[in-house]
Length: 102
Image (cartoon, rainbow, N blue to C red; front, top):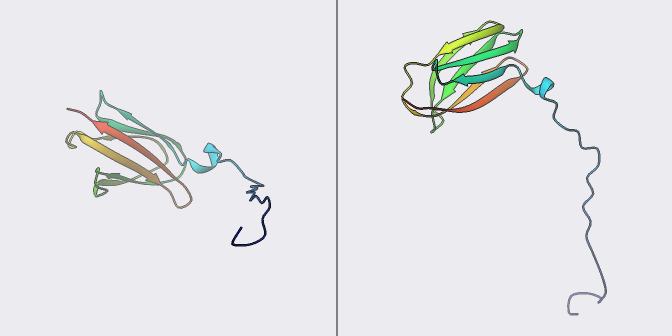
């Protein structure tokens, strides 16, 4: 041994106090894409939400502000592609990746 005393050594990694993520705490709304209607359905929030749709390059392509409750957002103008929808309130956010096929 040329860099210290010879012998057995080991390293240990101990993680304590890990808390899981509770969906109810992190979700502002449930987002669902309905391909038959070309629309996003947002449900389950009592808060006003800022809605933004980003294209595959991360550029915002549509935005809206929606009251709490159930919202149907028609996406007829979006061309085929992969998108990310973000619904955010002042405290929480929800994200959905979806594909539009025409």
